[in-house]
Image 1 (tube, rainbow, N blue to C red):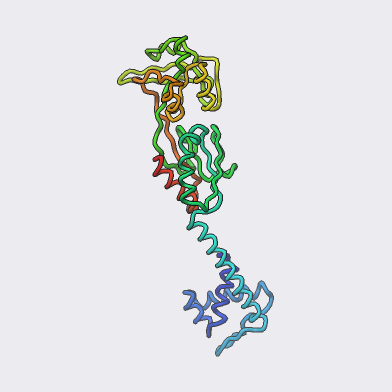
Image 2 (cartoon, rainbow, N blue to C red; image 1 turned 135 degrees about the vertical axis):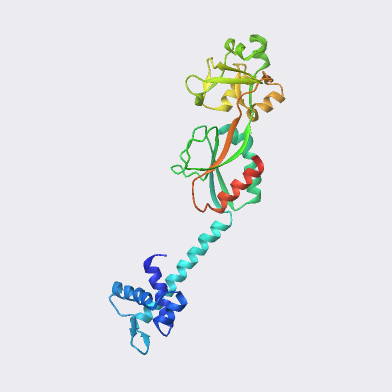
Length: 294
């Protein structure tokens, strides 16, 4: 509470008490401190609020009028605090969420549907893109992020890591052959994800063996769905999270390659800005998502 609001609160109590000492007992302040608050208001207003003598105190006409306005102002402040607390206590309002495109489509959307059914007072705004967003600048409440987290100022919770597969279409493999070892990928058109950088590599491991395959090919995209479509169309070999490729592998559009070799898992986190008391909508969505995807 600001100094002036505190002084108004002290004045309201002092106005109905027999003395500053009695007011101080109610407020757990000394009589001297009560007097300082009242005098501070009188100085600001340029008028006496309470006439004081050794025997009694009484409100001046200005003091009586000011008392009513103080009560109204303090009641308004209390009502505003109650509104803010109710908004914090119950999940409601707009919740802006950012996620990678493929993860948002394949994994997060079902969670959002279930969350919306559970908390209908929350309006969800889902922003899908494959770049790291500035949460404060873009008004993001919660972000889903893949890989290593660079921003240590955020509060992060780990979700289940995702498996990564290599795959290609049956038609492509019929023309170019099925790679039996990661070294064979040097003879294939490897589809690259732009976020991997200018010289991407795929790291394969099997027991104590490991091999790093340069990603060499004629197609690069900044979108995982585009890479999926290119692979289904027979353009080359794709490496993506299993949730992106699983349906296409199941229906025969793609064939999983080198299944006895492992690619590094992709870490996933749900993050929020570092607020001392996050809102109920933020807390509830993080808890809900951890139950579904943690």
